Image 1: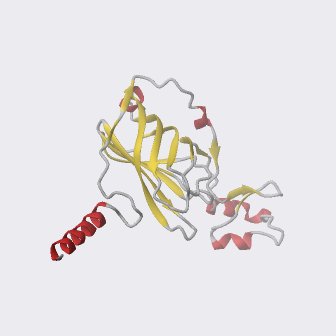
Image 2: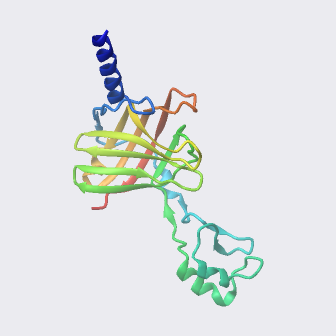
Image 3: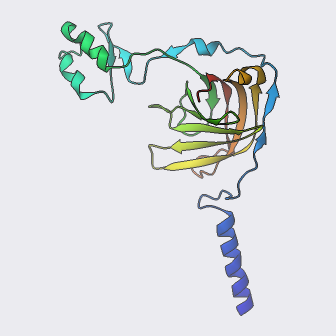
Length: 221
């Protein structure tokens, strides 16, 4: 009897080690192989599209204004109807960033709290090791991360939920990443991807999450 109790206890410890609280395996997934091609035959016209920084919009007076989290000093530069005072326009645009931000990402996903993302950020550790992250915004709270190490990659989704779901990390289960070799040698990331991730959320009745699309951006050192 005592032996059976010990076996059961060891089994519980093993399961706790193998699986996380959300039921996902703690075992690291092997890196996947990158598919290198001389030139990707695909359209990247989305890089001609641009957006203002989040919170910048055209008000009903035809002025670029700020809504949401804005510097407190601009409040006194507006009239009671929201119109920016003529004498304050120059100072207003010295404070508010109205840069045209050209898109570096076109993608679709069924990840939780995803409403679209137009930008990627690239962090370069060296020529062969880079990390890519998609941007979040007011409507999108899931971010895709891809880490490239020489000829292989790993990917995951980070959910920074604004609901009771909380924050979660979804590991990749399968997928492919195609990179334009010619552009890469010129210091530019031009790629296509189609990735599938484990769903460890019991509240969302989907077997897996997907994220697929295209990205194009210069790799800054």
